[in-house]
Length: 243
Image 1 (cartoon, rainbow, N blue to C red):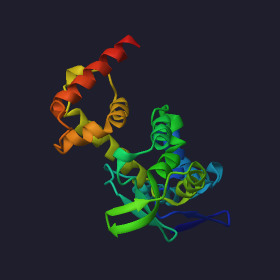
Image 2: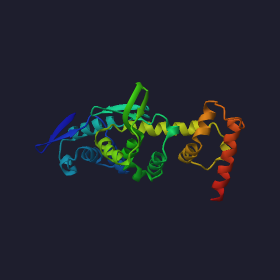
Image 3: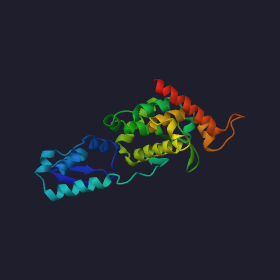
Image 4: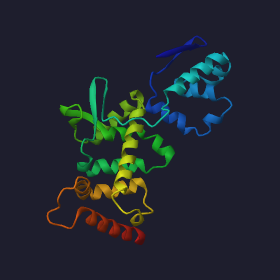
């Protein structure tokens, strides 16, 4: 952990870019073009007064700002289905096709917020997606704790202050990629105006049918999986236009 002194007071910079600091940085839209960028960036992450930083050594402040910038993900973070924090192992929802209605609604509510609002709720989104592992068969085959809003709230605050933002960005990327994969199994012309998340909503509603289609499982003598999927999408598209 990097430490520095300013007017005899010591400040610390975490070894990771926490979800909380990431949100603070990107909520200030004009930060990266500001003349006092380095001082403001250091102030956001450490709490050091901007006025004191402006009076400090230019090279020192610039070095600290560069150090903080290195903590920000430069590329799309890799999705991780598990991590350990404070001695507890957390796992990503192992079977999303079995996701409960409460889980889906909470994730949907957060993911459809405006960008600034969503930045304030990234830790909550992550706390819905990742929960304590309760039964582990292999490294990537496990069960997680049943969804509980009260426990989620407490977990979210822990994630906010102590977890690397790469985990939430990687999880978001996972859902985006899944949405794109799902789209490949439908005719694009059927749902031209639906966003990725709206497609994910449809996927949750039709999760058992989609799951069967993806893995070519039989559907008890019904029409072929793809034909059935397309039929449902046509009906959905029609009802969407009416609304």
